[in-house]
Length: 336
Image 1 (cartoon, helix red, strand yellow):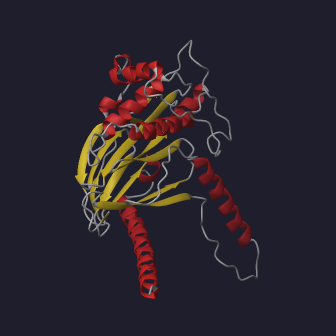
Image 2: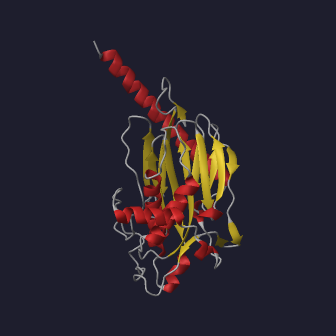
């Protein structure tokens, strides 16, 4: 984060939010094609061959989160069974990731529908948070609770399970609040890109992370079945919360159901609930970096490698800042 100067009423901090994603299927397809190209090149003798760059189709979004900058929330991605979201509520940046449990494929249920719907509902729950003052902090555990409750009471065919990590960064204080359910984790790096905090997976036992679950019901709507294209398509199906008429009778009824849902029916049969999410708080400083991801990253990339990637990212950010400062200085000097 970078402190803003001469800002008294608005946020004291600004942040750069970078998101990157690729589905397992897209990554596997690229690796297969890459290996084949290497093998084909090796069969061509007597030719000077240029190295083949390894550039998987990772999708990236970088946003400068600061007062006065344009901003548009993101509620879901085409990351296979993984999804992410980010949203703003007053002086808070709320963001998080979710990982759908792939075992539901065996039951004929597309797990990506659940994880994408969960992030979509989480983004809306963040935006609908009631904060009396601009500087009030958003509560990530309550956002997870209201998002999951809303999914249950909207009667949508989003069945399955998913882990979720919800994080809320106050741009007024620099405080990061987190709610983690399962093995989607995060690491906090200092200005030298060295790990200061590494969250641990939340599991019942090996390969059994804590997770939110909505099982199919006998008289409920038909579940969305998995297809080879469904999890990677830009138009892959998921559900967003229904628009809420603040004064309507149905909206008031739904809001009451969400507020009063304590998930006792789930906990009674051993399912995890948002109340089981592990909470933590971190006071961030100038140029701290927070990396949050599903287990697809941290199961395959060690923290020291994450530190190196963050260092390269910060170097790129510094170059962009320098270019902006230089352009701004040139514009100022050219004015009469």
